[in-house]
Length: 504
Image (cartoon, rainbow, N blue to C red; front, side):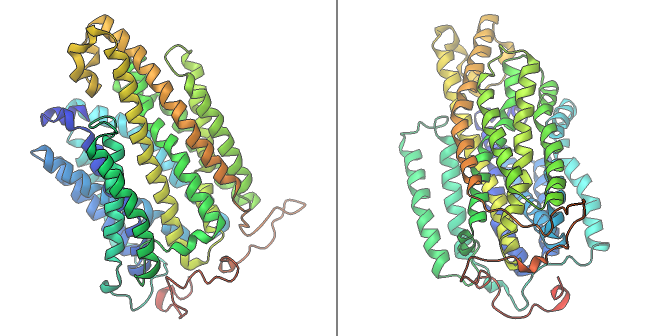
């Protein structure tokens, strides 16, 4: 980001490179999820790829910083669809008992991209950073071709007769306003503006007021609400979304700030620091894949959900000690332990929530679990970034000799060009800031673990027999709603689904 911002002479505004993307990707996830109910998964997937490519093209050719950020915002819209629609397609096409294996593979793919992204970005930046965005267009071309010419039908629960006028535009506007105001407040608070400034307080108040307004609106007005609130009457949906939200504060924070830790505290370059996330990401890949098979074999979710939550709490507690004084091998073990905890719960939350709702709610429940993860990530990145920035600067400015270098210190850029004593102070200060960040993170992970303890056991359709044989899988259509509730009433009125979807 500093390289891109420097080219546009916008180093103080570099946070908007990620913020523009995060805002739109978060706002549009429930919209794309609802779109699959109304217009089908194939159309939404195609639209997601095209919009993502348009945003990448804007970024690749942008001549000023504003246009570049617009491109990032457009790409975020497409990314929202890609994340949600792919998960929904899996839930629609794969039997519940095998779903964990496929969802785990999706998370493994995301984890691998988390490592490859910064590494490839560092390589591209040495030549021309615009290739970070041109490559998206090159890679998505075959995907569009396959979708257009080979994937003619994707089973889904699209309801016949739904038209454009049925889209919940009021809910979309309310949810967008709420998420944008709160996310900007959390991102600017303590960095661009102080937490007690009029700007931050106003944003928090507006965002806070919009939450009950949005809930009341969705309860009584739209025919097809963006987020059907009835699904939260299902205990596993509430448990999974709560666990995802609070656990993601740690997931996203470690992915974002561990490379910075190794650059600023350990003195590694961008390429090496990107690879040093491998202990964390590698165990996410291994355990998310392994647990997917364990769920399919055992027909259970709670043991893996609880084990992951417990390991995650312990690992995040151990990461408080990362300050540059421990042997690197010990740091890698702590990161690997945290990755294992994430790998246990990554797909388990989604499958646990899906197992307790009727098929008509699969898209909405899948979207909600993914959305809660993204919201938790934004809260985590904003909170942790604010803590690191404030603790780091307070420690640095305690030494008057650091005052002349305040612009570089605020941007956390070009620190290796500072005088030796200032570099040493910066390294120690960032190590202390990272530890403080983890102290603030542990309570969030602990609350996520408590949410997981409230989940009911999921019946995924079969359990191992006495001699290793498996009993007959249960038909997924028996997934239930809470007693006395018709959970499909806000999405699909009781009428037969016709056409290609009739037998799905």
